[in-house]
Structures are given as structure tokens and as C-alpha cells.
Amino acid sequence: MIRLGLHHLAVIQGLGQSGSVSATARLLGLTQSAVSHRMKEAERRTGSLLFSKNGHVIALTQAGRRLLQSADAILGEMALAERDLDRLSSGFQETLRIGGACYAGFGWFPRLYRQMRESRPDAAVEIVSAVSEDPGELLVNNMADIVLAAGRVEKAQIHCEALASDQLVAVLPPDHELAKYSFLDPIRVMDFPYVTHHTLPEDGREYDMIFKPLKIMPRDVICAGRTQAVLELIAAGEGITILPEKAVTMQAGYMGLRLQPVTEKGISVHWHALIRRTSMDNELILKGIDLLKTCLSRS
Image 1: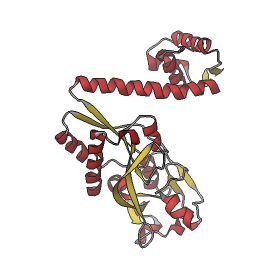
Image 2: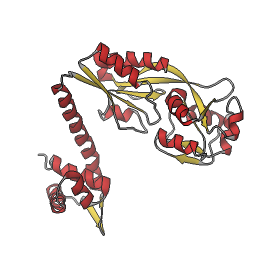
Image 3: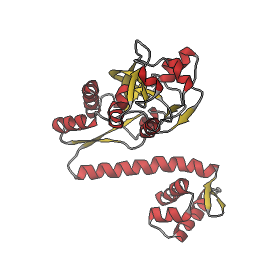
Image 4: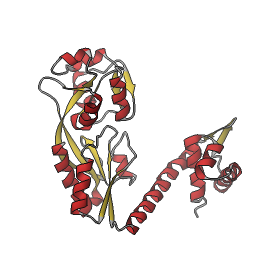
């Protein structure tokens, strides 16, 4: 028998995000006493200590953090379901959700959106807001139907479809001392702060294709989490990075950053669409992959 309702999970999620009863109450449109009541009720129903208090700060216990994982998944799925129902009531029969690894760019999206509307006016297409260090998680957690990644993801439940070729490029401020060269010698990366999204090694990225084979690592690594934050740090002269060219061409152009091939011959990478193996015969997803191949090849 299920002992907790969505209203309990919403409180757990709110406290996990804010650590505050008052902030959670504002988020959910409740009184603070109502939030406190649901906290006590959740602990009583589960027979577990879910929250610990230090002054006005509320922290989740190990049991609370476990429930938070389920709350995020369940409430996220409910939000998606309600959004899909809204779209159905507006005349859309299906929704294609496209996500990307944390470094992915979306300059191709307007072209894909127009082409999808022309070919499938009954279908909506959207970019999911969630990003992940592990792009496969967006599929496993049913947060996206297609996920873009520069490299393959080897998981039994995921199918990788090749989309387009690309190359790794160094991203530099225009006045950086390395900008005078026609290409980046990877050894020179050691001499400067290196800005990256995260420190998780990935296939098809700089660690796998450059640092590991050369047995080198940047001495000073700055983790920035999002592409916009990475590029803002570089524009401010705080470091350099290496990314797939298609992921940064548009933003780098707007910000006046220099893109430089890595090594004299260049280093190729390949973009893939990741989909669930159970979706390999889904007509809308297959249409989305075809459009991605066309749009990425032109970007």
C-alpha cells in the first residue's frame, strides 16, 4: 500500500531545493504550518526520520534524500503528462522532446522546428530544460525522446544513431597569447586554467581523445556546469576550453571568441542521437532523427 501522496512528495522536493519551510510554503502556495504538518505526516506514515533541523535550515536525512530521488522522477513525469494533455487539448497529437548533453548547442533548433511543423503539423517539438553529465540519464528517466551527444553511449537500453561529423576546437579570448597560432598544440593546455562543464570523462570528448592518449591533464581545472558559464569565463580571460565546434559556433561568434582547431590535422568527433531501444520504430522519433541529420549537417 502506498503511504505517501503527491502532496508529501512536493514538500520533500521543495525542502530538498530550498532547505527552508518558509521558502517551500511560498513555492507551493501553502502556509508554513501546512508544510510542517505534511513533514510530520510523511515521517509518521513512513516510520522514518526524513528531516533534520539546524536553526531555520532543514536538511534531508539519508531516507529523505532517497525519497527526493523518487519525488523528482514522479513529479517530473506528472508535469510532463499534464503538459502533454495541454498540447493534446490544443490539437497536437504527439510531442517530441529533444535533450542534449550539458555541452550541446541548439543553433539548429529553429530550422528543425520549422521543418517539423511543415511535415507534421499535428506534432509539437520542444527542447527539454534538464541537462545531465550523463546524457543517457535523460532517456532512462523518460525526460527526453532524443538526446544529442558528441560520442557514443554504450548502454544496453540505448540505441546510438550517427548524425553528423564535427571537430574539436579550442575556445579562446581573441587576445589570448595562444590566439596567434593557427591551431592548438594540446601540450600548451597545461599552461592555462582549463574551463569545463564537469570532470566526468566522456567518450568522444577531449579527455578521451586528447588528454588520455597524451597522458596529460590540465593543472588548473574550473568546473562551470553550463556552456554559457564556460564561455563567459573564457570571455572574461579566466581560461580556455575545448569543445565540439557545432556546439559553440553561434555563441562564440556572438561573444567574439576565437575558435581554433586542435592539432595541425584536427580531431574529428561525431554527433549521435541517443534513443531508447524500445522507441526504434516510433515514427515521430525517426522523423526527428532525419531532421537532425539535415539540420546538423548545415549548422
